[in-house]
Length: 399
Image (cartoon, rainbow, N blue to C red; front, side, top):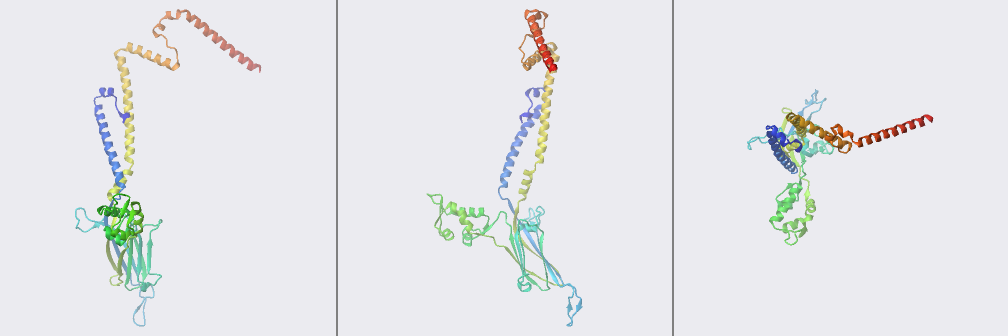
């Protein structure tokens, strides 16, 4: 900021520059507000910003009756070519409530572009064991570090009879969620939650029932319900996280019981099931993009550098103006002062002994006896120097 300030002299010469100084003050206040807002946004990102949406799972089945090539001896058609079969697709899309219409039908959420598989850790389709035997009745997908996300899953099998199937969907909670032991879940009123939510619910129960020891704050005195769950009448506060982990399990999967109806007259069928899921808030993605955007910062730096160059030019022009203005007002005095200043600078640069400029201007100054002595010393030193150079040259030629 200091390198962009205009001096008081410049402001007196150019009255309009006061507007520039006022803009600098406004910029300073605006930078402070933006810095505080940026810090607030960075802190908000540390909290899990989630919003609930509806994931509509669509189960669509297609039946292909096969090709009838001939008629059997009993008069029934025989499929000598392609046998009958069916295809099941598991797909989904994210829905949201229309803004301002909480009771209205949900619509497709266009702000979230996510693959269907990103919502799940695993998916298992269990077909009728009696129809497809022990080796062909399971279709499984499990997330790994190298998983390629997809918009849906597809299963194909041969057959023309209706098929009962069970679809197990394990949601991929972020952050991870856990199912509580039924006894602790009844006490806390929490069935599934993150570890921080579970810990907070237990701590709130302890505070409400005043179970913290009044003398030793590090100990928790369990009531009858907690003693039954944790198996001890008293425990340290630091032991709570490890004890809670023992009471946490993987959350239950979402179970969908479905029947694949293979009807030649109506081969295409679709059923929908709605699941409530949590997704990152749009506000979070907007904040992240704002904080990661450095293009505006680069533009501001370029503008600041340009302003700095202009201020430097203005200061140089001020020096030139003062120089010529003083010269125009009194040329003789200005030249005399300027020559004295230049002489002083020269003496400082050459480490010369300061003289008397006014006396040195007159010819009588050089008639003093010291001048003749100085000339003789100068000539003597020059003769000695030339002799040494000549002897050195003769020695080199003799060698």
